[in-house]
Amino acid sequence: MTDALEEIKAFLPCETPEAWITAALQHQDILLIDHANCEKKAASTAMNLMYKYIDRPELLKKMSQLAREELLHFEQVVGLMLSREVEYRFISPARYAKGLRDAVRNDDTGHLVDILIVGAIIEARSCERFAALAPHLDEELCKYYRSLLRSEGRHYQDYLSLAKLYSPEPIESRIELFCSIEKELIQSPDPDFRFHSGIPMAESN
Image (cartoon, rainbow, N blue to C red):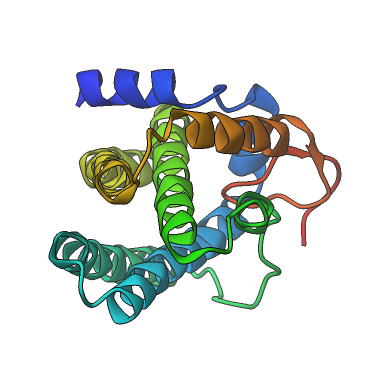
């Protein structure tokens, strides 16, 4: 997994700021709640792609596997929350995914390619954050987050390979665009702490 993690760090435009890690350790309840939400959203995104692009067998196979894994992760995180007496309550979504998707093109092919690139970036960031957090967490959470690195790394690779497969032209310029947006979202002040938030400004809620 070390090689895959290094590949992901090279792909992403920056590493997670230490200020975010500090906030995550102070708000582990919100970390778990938003992690559960992220797993649900990831499964939903995969299912939506399967419904919309029924003529893409490679996409159907990879997204079907991804959706199953994300839902399993959701169940696991909810189990961790129950064992730690963390109430699963509503919290507002992070600005992160919307900030990336605002730049997605509207034409059908461009839309699909961009959504896949965004998916790759989100999965890569998740993997990078699991690795960054793990050494600072208690034994149970550390072991669990380390166990997610392989699947999240594979999801990143699957999204990226599909984007290359379905794009009629090289995707490097689109990756560069979305990575520049992602860097701003990760490194700029963020009013709320979330799993994919930027640098926290204040107490989260």
